[in-house]
Length: 196
Image: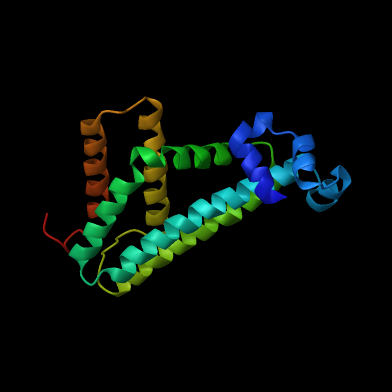
């Protein structure tokens, strides 16, 4: 039922999502849905949390691969710079927009906020853990708490949506954004470890 809900949200958005269409597609009764999820909102919160968690697992997997492959600070730096370019690619706009919309959807929905908070904490913990491991290996030199660094990197990445909303299709502007982001990453993690 949740997978079909995700498909319908993808197709119609939340405002166009109809429980009746879900029931037609799944054969589940309205009472069964309410019994399992409590309400339409509970079902949507479950679907959005699953989407959000999928984005999180993709991010953690990519970062983990970069950290685990790196043998030197310069290798890690190169991998993170490549990740920055990937993250800001136009093809990733939808993923950032979805994540932003899901975050905005918690307003006035305490159960949904609780569920999303747990997923977000899991992402931040995983990224902070990767930073701790990289620092232990001598690959980075973070002077700030790893959890704060993880939140900052996520905020910077998610913040790319602002440029995209402004219809930033200029390749030079995108390149400048990547360059600035990489400067922040270098200062945050590699100060004194790699040559500029």
